[in-house]
Length: 189
Image 1 (cartoon, rainbow, N blue to C red):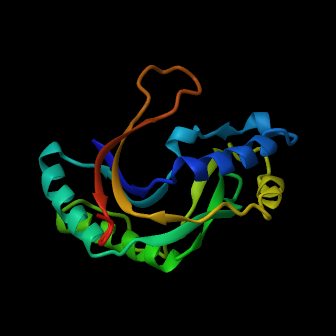
Image 2: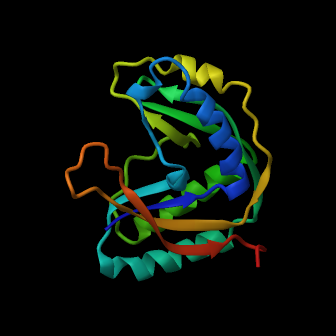
Image 3: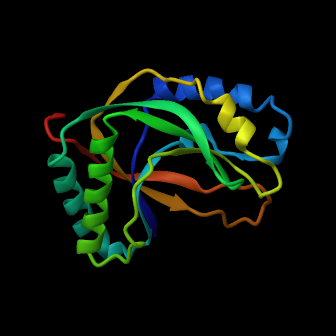
């Protein structure tokens, strides 16, 4: 199964971002982008790709320990950016260093289970809002998000998510995400 560790924004934060995203969808060329669904919004910490079912219990135990060793921290959705003309995203503000630490711990948990991971690189927290096909410049959308500042919330859990890829062949169908496990951060109850 395809898995990733993530931090999920709470409903109130997603509501704020949805309002900002609705304004972006009114900009010229927005219809050419594939907008992500609100229920799929997340900050990926560690993408594990394909994981054997037999590995999930050990991975879950290691992620639980990683969560327990990380104190809850404040985060908010903030501004935006783009990766070329491929992805438009909202950024993060708050205790981003602890978010990066949690990402490193989730990555280490996967590696210790023998899951092949991408080469280590600087973690850049982002929540993908839309994907482009390289034909529409995303700069105007990122610029329109420059002043966006969501309310701060406490991050209190680490989540393991399964990505179910489309199988119907229907154009525009998106992956479906399913929560496999949740672990409270240390001191979160």
